[in-house]
Length: 374
Image (cartoon, rainbow, N blue to C red; front, side, top):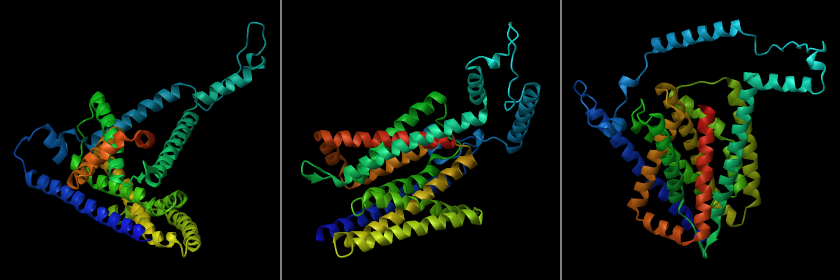
């Protein structure tokens, strides 16, 4: 019990420390941007400084121009579609030399049906979406299993209690991939100042920290059930941050899901009453609530940047992971844990394999997410 309480107190202080340090960095960048923003005509501070502190005003597209281009594109597509057969119309059977209809040949009907389905845009989009969903589920299934294994198993007789290192590893790998793709696609310069990505990066690393830490006090099924409450968190955060309203039906569905999850939590608390789990429950629940709220803010802010600045999936992946990597590096550098943790991981083969699997599955899941919403 004493060890569990000590771990809970240490985790809370680590969370507060990471929050204060990350918020200080983001606030300093924003203040520096405001201080240097009244630049003279075409004054520049260098490519990287301009990318970090200032919006790319020259890269913004005028709304009227974009609307005109959209309308012209719509007219062109409409005219081309009117001159060709509709995708939903079934092709007429074609006669062969012998006078028989080709559709009457064995297997011809099923072949034509398959060809019609493959040529239908809605069927293609549905198949594509299902593929992305399956890939996402498999990636995060592996991620969840590795997550629980690393945070609960012992390596050479000692537990591994460094969630910040795991966050840094996944963000570093994702950043390297995003940088390479953005360089190839010439998308390294975002229309939004890069420091604006730091806001959702803070919530991203803190939510990941809460998720890892909660596994020290709660079981993996409890964490997965808690994730179902994120829908209500996204709806509430969207209203509080952006003033966005949703239909009452969506609030009702999210509330029903939360009530079901609450019933599960109550049963779990009753079954662990009187044991060590009773002491873990309040600490774990605190980190679960923080995880849901912070993760909801991350989704809302990413949607805001994508809509306002027309951010591509690779630019979003680069911006969020770059700041997440930088902030976790600062946190670990400040408390002098990066060197010792890296040495331990490299000297423990099983821990190295588990961390590598965790990072690969997390990055793969990110790729599926950004590809799906793009």
